[in-house]
Length: 197
Ligand SMILES: Cc1cc2nc3c(=O)[nH]c(=O)nc-3n(C[C@H](O)[C@H](O)[C@H](O)COP(=O)(O)OP(=O)(O)OC[C@H]3O[C@@H](n4cnc5c(N)ncnc54)[C@H](O)[C@@H]3O)c2cc1C
Image (tube, rainbow, N blue to C red):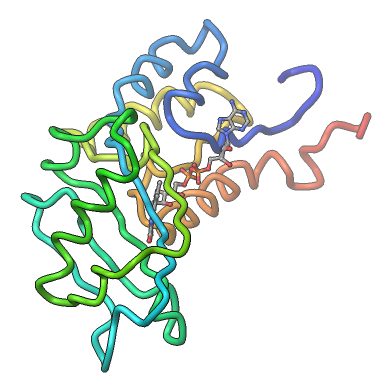
């Protein structure tokens, strides 16, 4: 890094980021390796006829269901349903090897009391299981962030961005990216750029 770049933002999931850090930053690596990720899976199913009707186009389930929510793919795509699988029951009962057919049957069984039209033949479906899908806050997260900060402040031109900094929502991830860029702001001020550049 010293040789080629004035600044680097490591913007990958925590465990991948840990592998990118040099040996000298092994305490920081350990912190990143301690971040907890939960699995999540998504299926998108196309049915022949609309499943959702009227104003209700999505359902959220409690965490004793393996499906956490089911919703129309778009206001005009009510025959296409996106099922998201996450939460405690999903983690405890489902693995990467669970067949998609089984997943869809369980999801439709959960949705059918509210929208019986999901019990119609499927035209097409895609499914993906993400092992490190959703980042989870651990205990004493503010202290964790303070420790990350103190390790980073010892290294010039390094910043971290991603779901484990400000939270897993897309907005929070963007915020962490902006903050990482701001952190490097001083490095990129014209007077601090190396003359070789
Ligand atoms: C299925 C699913 C549905 C979700 N739905 C929502 C939602 O509806 N709303 C919401 O707010 N959030 C949602 N999330 C959460 C949100 O998408 C994530 O928290 C967010 O994308 C994480 O952003 P990130 O920048 O930390 O990591 P990522 O978005 O994962 O970006 C990291 C990037 O790093 C790359 N990368 C990884 N390893 C390496 C490597 N070794 N070298 C180079 N590049 C590498 C990856 O390819 C990826 O492009 C969902 C997440 C999943 C998995």
